[in-house]
Length: 231
View 1 (cartoon, rainbow, N blue to C red):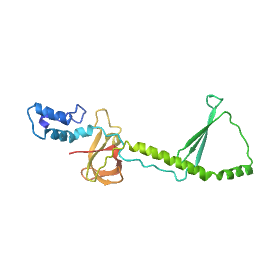
View 2: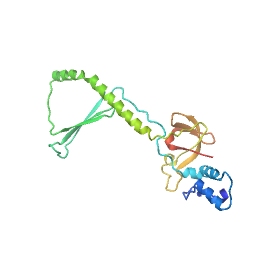
View 3: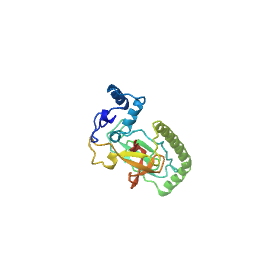
View 4: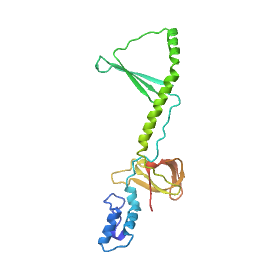
């Protein structure tokens, strides 16, 4: 196959036209050669080409399911911002008050026509705050319920796109070249570099690996940046 196809359409790891396994098998038959496993051998030959694997694209679909984080105490800390003066809208609205919960990032806003100042006596203000505290647990319970519902819908939508890609200890991998050498990449550079050997499975989609000579790499890598290397 090497004598017929040359360097698999790639020379010095510069991007050129790439022939597929089926096309390679047809090309061989046109030269007068044939054997029963020709099509399968062509697929394996193209799949295990080192230069072609380094120039291939990394799948962009998520490789692990989402893990939602639910706030244990929603609305424990707020941030309030006053926005304005804006272009006058319908009804003479020129200002807005935006409220953000620091933990859940829940955001709410209200429109204002004018900004006025009103002084509260300390006793009256404290009494009003004590009255509002009676409704705090109920409001937090409603907010937490809605938050769980929203996160459940978000996770279900995200998980529909997941295409799991798992590796085992001892597997050979390629990693994205643009992540490790962001300033040395050009249009015709290899997209992946390696191979490396998996030494530890840290999490569902996180791995530690080493160079082929056994020298460890002191970083963990997510499966979205990795691709299996075939030999």
